[in-house]
Amino acid sequence: MTYRPPVRDMSFALNEIAGLKELCGSKAFPDLEPDLIEQVLEESGRMAGDLLAPLNWTGDQQGSQLGADGVKAPDGFADAYKQWFEAGWCSIPGDVNYGGQGLPLSLAVAVQEYINQANMAFGLCPMLSQGAVESLTQHGSDELRDKYLPKLLSGEWTGSMNLTEPQAGSDVGALKAKAEPVGDGTYKIKGTKIYITWGDHDMAENIIHLVLARLPDAPEGTKGVSLFLVPKFFVNDDGSLGDRNDVKCIGLEKKLGIHASPTCVMAYGEEEGAIGWLIGEENKGMRCMFTMMNNARLNVGMQGVGIAERAYQQALDYAMERKQGKAFTPYTDKPDGMSPIIDHPDVRRMLLTMKAMTEATRGICYANAVALDLEHNGEDEDKRKWGQGRAALLTPISKGFSTDVGVDVASIGIQIHGGMGFIEETGAAQHLRDSRIAPIYEGTNGIQAIDLVSRKLTMDGGKVIADFLDEIDQTAKSCSASNDEKLVTIGRELSQANATLRETTDWLLEALKSEATDALGGATPYLKMIGTVAGGAYLAKGALAAHPKAGEDSYLAGRVEMAAFYATNILPQAAGLKAPATSGAAGLYALSTDLLTS
Image (cartoon, rainbow, N blue to C red; front, side):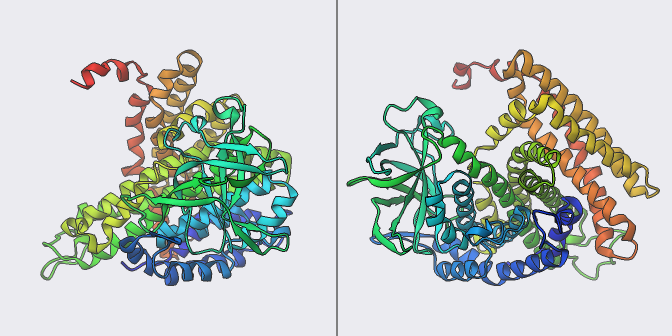
């Protein structure tokens, strides 16, 4: 289960595909330099490999435990977390006025990918804390920011998101948790929340819960939801910790994967009531929560990328070591005895698929992160508007497509291991178990697809998606104009796939005007289609950047070859998604519920 931080892959994707290097020396990031980017990637990757990766298997086997004093993380986790936050990795994108480093979000997203690769369950804790920071930064009062942000940013304290209740899953507006005004600016919170990741643990001295609850006489549905800050321990004016708040974990879920991460049932106000403070305006909690939800969705997409990378590395190592049969091919050495299975064509195809899909989703997610940086820190209004639109478009693709790919790649990894992949001790099964939650939480992938089709395609009168498709066409034309055969092939396949994507997009936009159900019926196939084409476009962009020096650098030559493999083996699959994306909804309801149950 050896883990190697893929520093060069990530650096290439950040700089050459997503364009982070273009932010170096900008007004928003005057201290950002190429050398600093490399230093962050190298050092955080090294630490993830040395510190977090060895705890992945043991944490999975031991899991978190609930005792009389609360939740205890697996052995070694608390010490590892302390070393991680003391190294400064939690504060990369934070506001410098509160102790943050003021670096781009996209760089923090890359660091988060390392954690996901090394130990996905561990990585959920700092990821959710970052979400709390974002919501508090944008919507909290000065008093709340001054009291809580410095230690949340440093990592000394952690955060949690508390939305879900037994009757309120994807339909958040159905929640019943109550918030009663006390009269002194605080509120008493009462209710039960479920599926609260890292809702309690012993890795930090305080946990800052962001809790959705309903005020008396609040409107029904999401328009009557407010957001509250509820600390595990009260914080005194001097910053020291006071008494315990009336909040506790009353149960841990037994799960398929991410065993090391405690998934808590949280009770608020079992006695006098948990004291909380309002974040933002009354009944505007969903707006505050979505500040952290959107970035959380990108980071969940990065979980798909991270677990795919880890599964690929393990499958590659196994395929190089495991010998079975003799591979007689014109591309490999003549076998002397049994061949390593990597020499067999089908195994090679599976490995290339794993690698290409991982790199494609990395390109999508990093481009999303850089767009978010431009949205908030662009040099002018035009760049900020462009970043806002592009980030909004890419977020459901990053979350939905990348997490589906994570599951698929982890499954292929088991296949390469053969029977040993089905045996827990190899560790390959853990990657699949851990990956399966990512398409579900932070908005199921079905919801991501609906959001993409019903909201994102129509942004700015359809201009945002049109500009994206035009950009893909331009990438295809640049490839086709090359005198390199591989680039020409990439350009041809990308152009054809994008033409089909454009036709499908136009059909959905028309369907939304007449019968939206027809468009929603094809939303999930469309999400897979646009993800497949976008991934090919970003790999093609990387191939264009790599080509000038590919003759003298084997790594860069490999980027061109990988993009060509994707173009000829994966990209053509997009065409087959047009029919299900445009077949309408009638066929989904042609078989009655009675017949489904017969």
